[in-house]
View 1: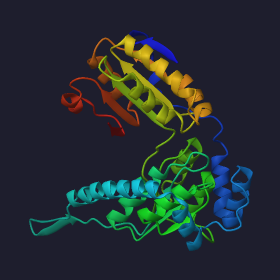
View 2: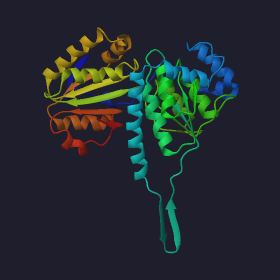
View 3: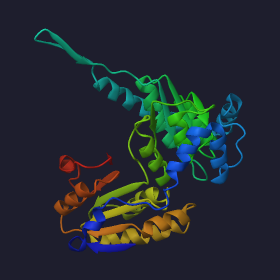
View 4: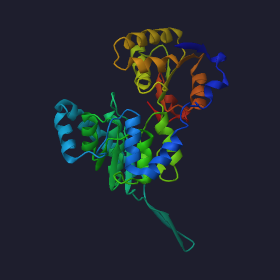
Length: 335
């Protein structure tokens, strides 16, 4: 992992990341739009998701997955659902309907839930049940009539998380073909008003392409985190949070911006230790090797870097961080 100083940082660091190999996205979307379920099956088979006779999970399959999920994991899922639901309800309560009379003209706005929302949940060997919770629960709290979930090679724990969160229908499909199916509808998959949820570069490119056919939340992938830390930060925690993003995707990026060279060296050592036992080390190592540590002279330089880069996740691990919150403006989420 490379370490550079603030003065050596070039404009290339701030450029939008270009992704190779996504030229096929438009053609896949077109094929699914025209071919429906059969095209979804064909691409699922081609991209390693297996032979899918039935795209939608049955009630029996969902119930079986819930039963197979250990009770302690179900308890954790339910606790997370409750936390997300409480915050989502508080958010909804803060969005007020408005009506005023202005010179004899009545003006206002209303808050109307969408009818159908599609939640994309990454699947495969390293499932993310948290993504099911974070997409389905807010939609149901907002009053969305129907929430469908699409996830490739979906694992029982993800099925359980989606079902317990309130998903109305669950489909075992993923990738560009799932995004296209939700946008245009197929014989099995209903067309949705909005697609939400993270994914790899192909899913992100597909969401960008279907925007306008339906709504999307935002372009959320590949994963990216920037951590701003001083000498008081715990290097093991910093290393873990960097790898937590890098294990999602080889195209993910983690940036450490620090006033402490010693912390930077300690974080590199902790990353090396984690990689010896991390189940996702093959992916995480590829991503972390393309990531970067930037040494700055002061927090002012760190703020400048963060606001110019506008990371998806921004994490502050330094003294007086809380007092500095108002200085940061451009980020997806702040920790």
